[in-house]
Structures are given as C-alpha cells and as structure tokens.
Picture 1: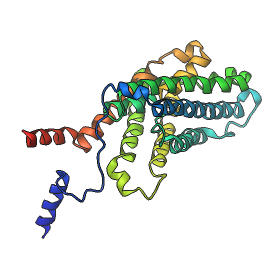
Picture 2: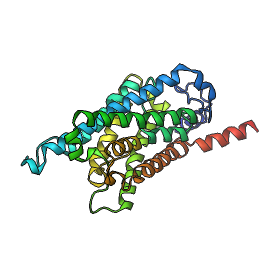
Picture 3: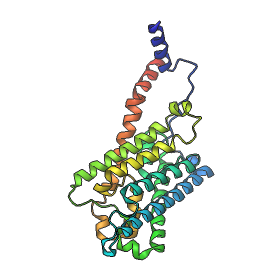
Picture 4: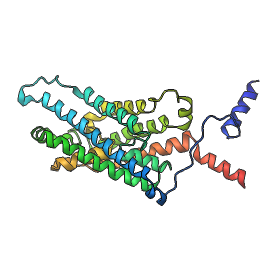
Length: 289
C-alpha cells in the first residue's frame, strides 16, 4: 500500500496527475515590447514609485526621530525613543502594508533587488524590470526629499538616514551582511508567492505580505549594527542622493552589489534546487524528443 502511494506521488510530481490544484505561470518573455502599449504596465510603475516614496518617507523619519530622541547633546535618555527594535518594526511593518496594498497592481516589489531576482526567475520581462527599478529609485529620492523638506535641521544633523559601514567592521563583513540579508528577503518572496503555496493558502489573503514584512524586520535586527541595513538599493541610493555628503557615498557599492548578489543566489536556489526547474525542463525535452 505504501509503495502505491509513493508511485502516485511520483506521478503527481511529474505533472501527469490531473488533480493538481495549481499551475506554474509561463515564463515572462525576455523583451516584451507589447507591454509598452498597455496601461497596466504604467499603472504598475506608478504604484512602485508611490510605494517606495511612502516606504522611505516613513522609515527615514523613524530613523531621524530615534537619533533625535537619544541625542547626548540634548541630554536625552540613551534608552529613549523607539530603539533599534522600533526601527526594524518601521521597515518591516511598512513593507507588509505596502506589499499588501500593491501586490495586485505591480506585484509589490518596492526593491530593485527583489525585481532583479524575479527577473532572473523569468517572472517579469526586462522592460518591466528596468522601469520598476527606475521608478523605485525615483520614489526613494522623492520620499527622502520630503523628509528633508519637512525637517531639514534634524535631517542634516542626524545623517539623513543614509547607509554606511559602522566602525569596527570591514567591507567584506558589510558585503556579506548585505548578501545574506537580501537572500533571506528574496527567498521569502519566492516562497511566499510560490503557486503551490498560493493554492493551498488562498483562504488567508495576507499570508504573502506577512512573512515578507517579517523577513525585513528580522534582517534589520541583525544588520542595523553593521551597515544600517540596506538590502534595498533604492533605499540606500535615495538616502545618499538627498544627504549627499562624502560619507554617504563611501562604500556605497556594497549596497548595490550585495543585494543583487543575494537576490541572484535566492533566485537560483528557489528555482533550480527547490523547484528543480532545470530537471523539469530536461524531462520535458526528453519526453518531446
């Protein structure tokens, strides 16, 4: 009896079992010029811009507010303010809210590294990926610009929320922190949006945004003391552009290379190891030969 069950499971894995309750979407074309004629693309790009703007506005305000509340020059309580825990909650909570709001419009990327990982996995076309990244970076710049416009004195005094390497850590450590942190985030994105999981958990509409927000929260707890936590090139770029002091650009490459490498590793791990995309493609090729 057990052997029969195993055989049935193997058949189901090969795709021959007609009762499969999910369908893998076809891979997105590399270059889809037809997308440029559709309003849905531009609506999604606008959604990415606004979401990233709101993300940077709330989170950078939280960082600056915390530094103001614990400023030794004001004789403030060093244990006051929201603390690192509160900052991590601000980043993770905003991602949860914004992914929930925009997932049905743009997919809720809000991060060039996430977009890059999904592009490598053929979830989005090259044109859509590039437009998303431009919109995310522009939104980040505008979001931080609003913070500076409303609180210029505090903004300049407390470093503009720009990412930078903390004293005592090497560039290699910072790069590794960004790679691993982004891997955790992008791997969570792939797992939370997997068609298998979506079919099984469709009765819980907030399930995908929730673990993604928690991933951002947990990574911030671990890496704020090292790099201030990037894992989002748009977040790091927007803060550096508006603050625009020398220290904001020191080691800035870490906050691009690290997230993109981490996203690539996560895409490869999920698609080719967990979902065995290469093996399935080979099996399909042999069956058609």
